[in-house]
Amino acid sequence: KNEVEQSPQNLTAQEGEFITINCSYSVGISALHWLQQHPGGGIVSLFMLSSGKKKHGRLIATINIQEKHSSLHITASHPRDSAVYICAVRGRKLTFGTGTRLTIIP
Amino acid sequence: AAGVIQSPRHLIKEKRETATLKCYPIPRHDTVYWYQQGPGQDPQFLISFYEKMQSDKGSIPDRFSAQQFSDYHSELNMSSLELGDSALYFCASSTRSGERGDEQFFGPGTRLTVL
Image 1: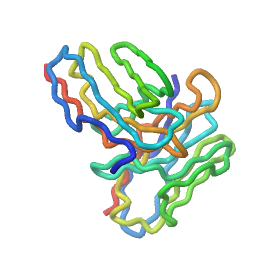
Image 2: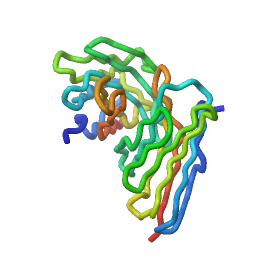
Image 3: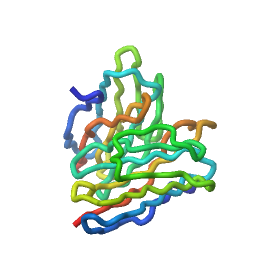
């Protein structure tokens, strides 16, 4: 069983839909990262959070430390949001989830 | 704003050759991390440096070595390259202070292909 699990693995949605990606982890962490990786590989850090909720534009990230669960939400999704979204937890090192491939159809 | 710079962006080598990957962190960032992402795989942590000293070590093969220099840039040296070393190598940097302290900012990666 992976230490960090994401769901769904793949998600296809219509432009404008509300998107939720989930991340569950089984180890103690000091923080959780949400990352975005586009085709071609570059990784962009979206959020780092250790409690509560953060919002940046159309993106919202929440974390529940007791339940060891985090969610990434995208409101009013757009085709340019199409990417792989990766949850990574920071304990002694950064451990990555397997990613969620999001495709937004115009 | 300045981001993490990696060079080269692409590198092609043959088996048993050596390669050196470079990472230039965001200005005033004191910590550098190296990750390896194989085709279709999650990134795996290799090694990290804080203030020019190795701070943590992950699944870095003995054939690889790395260091952080006085200007905080880091180099990953890879020797006796194998086909399985073909991967995307990411560098990330962070600082312990400020609003986004400890958050890792990733470079664009170096895509290494071993033939």
